[in-house]
Length: 265
Image 1 (cartoon, one colour):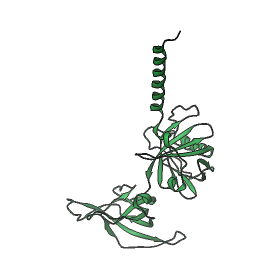
Image 2 (cartoon, rainbow, N blue to C red; image 1 turned 135 degrees about the vertical axis):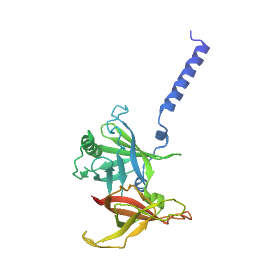
Image 3 (cartoon, rainbow, N blue to C red; image 1 turned 90 degrees about the vertical axis):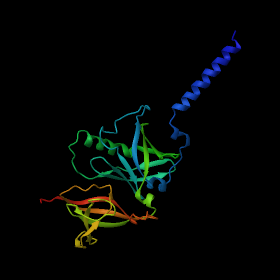
Image 4 (cartoon, helix red, strand yellow; image 1 turned 90 degrees about the horizontal axis):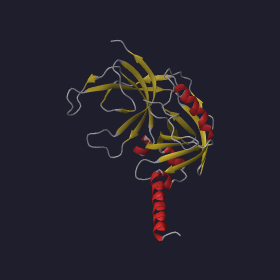
């Protein structure tokens, strides 16, 4: 004979278990949807967590002390960054279905333990991608990629400069002198500024000439000056909408270091 109190207690326990299961489920799985190509291209995607085919969390795709691998989508290609080399692969998105071609990579060798092996595994894993789902809420968007073996990656999105500035960039090349020089920079005492000049190249890559040296008071996003090193940088220049009164209307973001040379004093 089953007493009413026992039935009530069983029901309460079952309800508690259901609530606990829901609490353990990642929030982003509640509102996942198919990503559009525009949404994929509006962010760079950094690996946050990974799970193997059995659903267990794994660190197999990350190296301790290094930045996580990053994916960036453009209209035609998927780029893998923050490993040893940069890999590029064609991709196709159709609803939640994702297809990735075998990546092509630069051939630089890296001595760091495990880095080349990780890069090789990433290159093998990407063509097995089968699905992509996007979750958006109050925080950063989360992109979940599913693979043929049942494993998955969860990647957090950060807006690209083009998304942040709301316009396409202008590509420029700058030579940056090896040493900073004293400059007058508002209320900043003993300010030191970069000396830069614009380099012009023909379509075939042949250097055509250089402009005059000028003082640069701002910062170049994604690049840090090192004293005594001369650089030629390929930059994306953005127009800043409604900049503060004491700020520039232009923003510069590093695309690539073209040349780097240690200069003896």
